[in-house]
Length: 209
Image 1 (cartoon, rainbow, N blue to C red):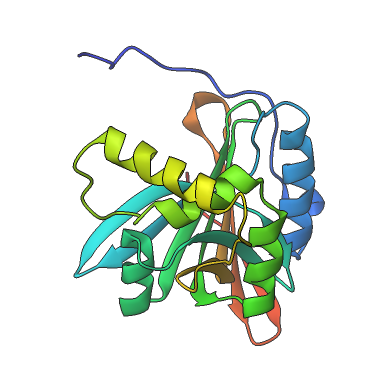
Image 2: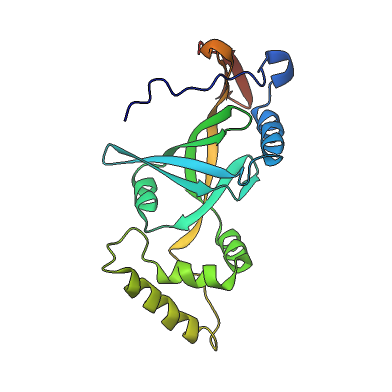
């Protein structure tokens, strides 16, 4: 598979300091709003963790930006949950193709409060709640049929019994320490602005592409 000649010229927007400002959250909100106009799921978020010195990357969905934290939900016993238990440092990435933009964030992940996990869990469709209970996420599964049978058994049980959020399922809040905003530009002379947390403010600088 030879992809050396497969390329796109990035020429839609620019990222200049005068418009970017000094608050990375404001810039993220602006970019997210613009991505929401064209992207079907602008909250797709790539999460990278490290477990036993092995980087691991997967796609999740951003569910909230609250109190400066980027929140997503998962099974705490999953591969990512076990990795975060060992090493809370995390990197998250947003890529918005139509805007030719990406945002990379480095920070520290911590579990959200029990009430927050409860509130979100019970806001999900019933089938999604049952699916979270049925899945021993990241454990070996013998067959697809075994999972579907387990789901059906649980669905029948919860027809007449209240659903309870599993204690091993909940949210993580990523507290950013570093932002990088990347805007594709022509001739691969891309714009890159970073923001680093310094006490209670952010230090901004431009990087070579």
